[in-house]
Length: 189
Image (tube, rainbow, N blue to C red; front, top):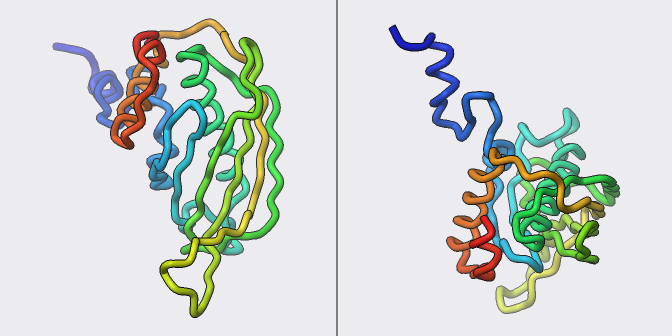
């Protein structure tokens, strides 16, 4: 008979993971229901709602989620900017300024501060829409910054083939959001 049932389950789990249990890099983003807004070399952003699965026992956003999203958005952005070179975070700092209770929409926006051949530095701002009673819908939306982060990354590590499915998924997300990546960025993949 063929391989064991465990082998066949892990080889085709249907969840993006490969036979060795490595996911495509989007598993946790999917778990927190992260919705992409922008995927581009100049900005990586999206939003999610704080739910019990992303909260501390006190009913507010868990700091580990902001750290995870900071590392993820900046790393994916650095890959896009560096034409899919393998990157790795080398220093992450997160400052939590205000809490975000369960039910709050959180917007995460990462932008590059420095893009070099071997090192990149990205900033991330986490914000929530301000609730203004009596404000009209024609007024500009205001936001409260709840956390800020900075990630330094090293660029150009040896490139494993197993990163390709995640990179292809990111290109699909960019296209879905009507962001055209430079041809050399896509062809490098």
